[in-house]
Length: 92
Image (tube, rainbow, N blue to C red; front, side, top):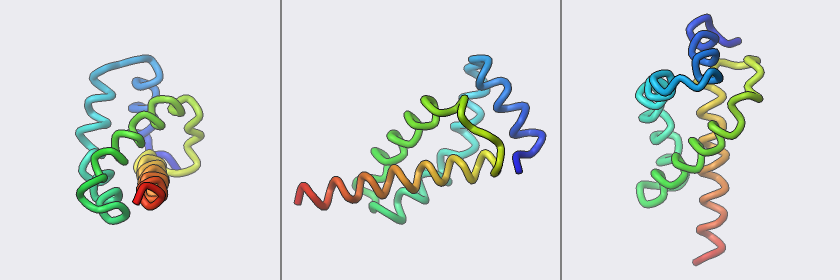
């Protein structure tokens, strides 16, 4: 379940509040990088996180609140990192 803080932050994000997005990035960037690092290593972790942020921005309106915002962000990050990992395996 999304917390009250998540709900307020989400409301601000959907309204286009740039400060809310900065807060989101500041709060979750390191956790997202840790997830990506565990999957793809240091070489591609930043790219996976960047892909994840793009997915977050594109799909923010679709967040249903069935999980916490953090869980949703980290799941997107893990999926982005897995896709990056598959892509890198094909290149080698």
